Image (cartoon, rainbow, N blue to C red; front, top):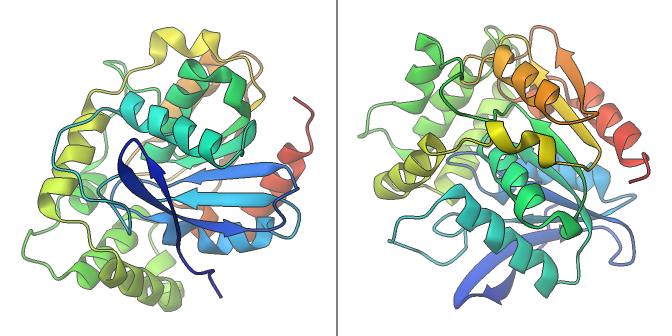
Length: 272
């Protein structure tokens, strides 16, 4: 069972988060993706919580965190993540981010390197003009009809984000996405604010400044952020490792859960 939501005040906003594991253990920070909330990390958080202190916050304007109508950038979210870590005495931490969360993690390591023990960048990109864009199937996952009910939107999005065949083989994953989508619906304007922040993301010229151990995890059938983007990311960060999952789309933690957790546990034992 997931723990009761906890909150902390950051910059006048209420930030909701889940916490797993002993408070004295090394910290792992899990950052969600576009349209996602902390709930999407629950399975990973529970598994890692046997050995680590695991914190999973909701960004501003998502989940149970305070609403926010003003525009923002991914560096803004990175600064808020840094303030969150400092407020909870959770630094330095191993930072795991998927998709938009991986972009925020890059900015966090660049802007607040003293808070980051290491990075796990999942299904993400450095952005910039050299990025390979989403496929037609990936774009369909992003731009579903606006009138869809929140749970159905989450169900259809997951089916398109994962590799072909996953949805038919794992109806329980779609049902869980549907339930979480209803619990934490993301409004259209909130989605637009996140999407605009992503569109402005470009760390290409700064990647060489990231000096912490970095593991890049990516599926070879990612329609939202094609694999070439992960290759650019891994080649730009000194010493970064790249692990590619076969027959896997944009959600490796759901599509390859055993391998994903094994890779996380193996990497988190690497000394900084």
